[in-house]
Image (cartoon, rainbow, N blue to C red):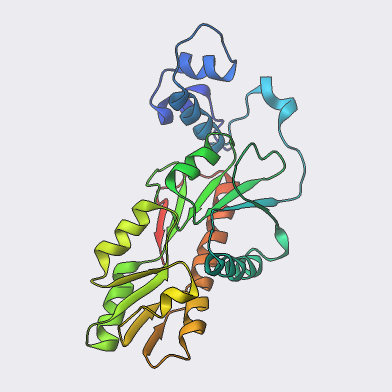
Length: 261
């Protein structure tokens, strides 16, 4: 028989007392509990699929699975890239899920079973998370928080592959990430990086050897006289995202929350 989740399990995972959990669940007035602690408790409640009876009548009962996709894409290249991701994500999620899209400013999302935050800043990710207590998955955003699944490219592996392929100096070309931490990781991994915000930026790249994981950038650079190495990550990233969506909705506990593909 499956073990019943109790308020003490929530308290242990959140690192607080059972009384604190009770105060948060029941919205007890007069308690000095920080918003950070409240949010953490609610995320643990969601992660363990604990259903307080007091809120049973408010739980979403629809059998349909609707996934909200939030993005912070700004340039035309990013927007075109996002369409490619959505197309592949729809294939990986199959007919079991419907997708709905949100752009800033982010508020409460009441009609979704889970949220995928794609290419958003860490600050925007937590803005979404602090307003929504449903499974939240970070794609192309470094949150490094065990409460959330996180999927990013394995830039170290890409660097090794490019060094072996070119055997010479090369430049990694990608659009500018919305997340500053991810941008820093890319800059640390590759000796030469060009962050692209428009097609005109491509004309300023002086390297003959180019690595990219962007299908849009690869298409734009095919007409240039360069050695191009394009690694299509749409499928592996979206497959891993779909797997994380299913894991999150199963409410099973997981040890691995961060994936590099």
